[in-house]
Amino acid sequence: MQASSFRGQPAAVWEFTFEGRVSLFRAIDLGYGREGGREYDIYLCAPDAQWDTYRPVFDHVRDGFTTTG
Image (cartoon, rainbow, N blue to C red; front, top):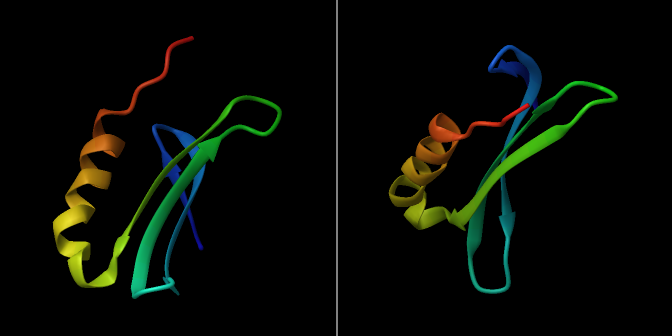
């Protein structure tokens, strides 16, 4: 897990692999928010062999994610 920031708020990025029932999977998890306030999580999981195909989906969601209020 790596400490980071996202949109000016404290964040953490966790990228990891795990063994599924059929194959190896890879995942990335971006969590951010303020203690005592709202917290958000953006997560993607895909077969490791196809990670390069799916990773841009995470980037697209992350880059377009907005909150109101």
